[in-house]
Length: 114
Image (tube, rainbow, N blue to C red):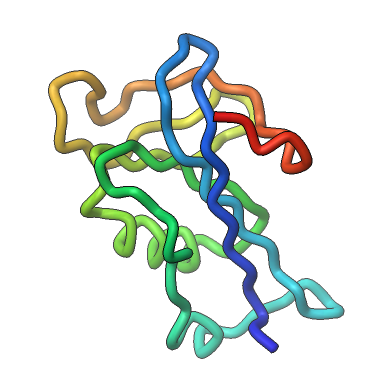
């Protein structure tokens, strides 16, 4: 069993910008993972790198670092902050810039909206 579960959810920002919401969950009983748990961790096969990706989940900073690195080919990458929205940390488009905050509501995993 993997200690980390990744799920990609098609979604839109409050302003209507389509993106992919990458949610991670730590599946260990105590909620603690070790650096070795990212070895072999693969992004979901259905990720589309021609869209932006917002990463969200409760975990260590080094897990976020790994996921940002793996998502780098995407149009843009942001990290979700519940106080702000998705803070863009990498961008390959003129439409979204680094340090831009994209307001969003967390996707409802049961709805899986587009």
